[in-house]
Length: 365
Image (cartoon, rainbow, N blue to C red; front, side, top):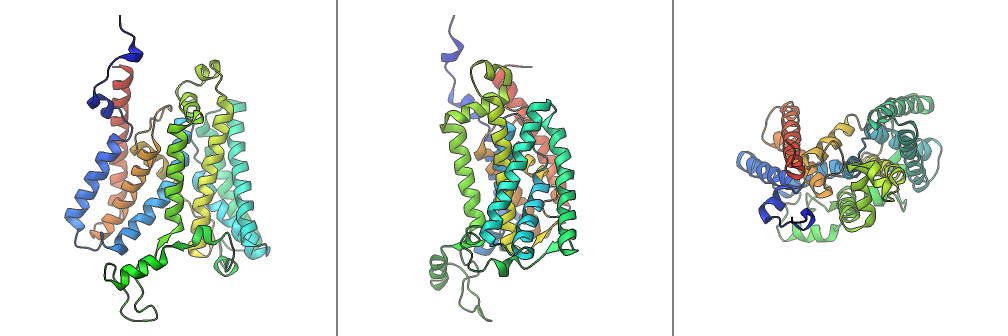
């Protein structure tokens, strides 16, 4: 009798059970579809690529954290509220209290990651489903965000961050733009369109790569490396696949899950900080429904809702699909409400496909 651990597996079967397969196929189909219906609308011009690229990067930042946490077998529904909360903390500390922006940003990261650790601690110690614990924090954080902003400013939108951030060494890391000289050169040689009038005459319509995109790429690369190239990545898979069996072989399951909750909070704070620096303000309603959008990106990317299986690359492709479709419908002149129809349809399709893949792996019927 042959040992199943050394059983030969065909290349086709190996490709079929990869978590990213559905996301790769979906990405190709989405690009082909919008190239056909919106190819001449400017969607694939430099400015159009920047539009859907930035939107996709926003989804990717929070999808990376959600992906690793879901593979570890848990959910975090407080991500959206965490985004609004982190932004308001930065704005209150810097604009209302007069602290340096760099210190306000660090404080927001510390506070939000502490809340993430508290989420994980409560899940571990109480045995409650993470769905319930983080759903509670969704309401707690949203309420705190509104209360703090009204208490300090008597309004739910706090402006003045952009002025406070001028010359700040850390603010640029979240709101700056890189490769400006290169893009100016592309504009000078005619590769990128330039402004033909006004105060920006001669400047390229796309002046560089926003740091939001850099953060998204950096987090995707880090998450993929952590998950596939390190022992800790094996611990994440083991914690989500069978937590009790993982404990029997020495995996620190509790520590892994708490750290993943903290990393999810970190990603949400990165998103919030980039958003605050871009708009120059914070609003109490920011991040609304982002927790569900992050989960949808991860599911589209091939992760199982039961944990123990998934891919950061797949989640990033899910975010790309999300961003391209959202902006593609706009460029195609379609009704924006169709985006929600698409989300519902692709979510059902992704869950069915992921379930089929799981059955292929486990041999279930």
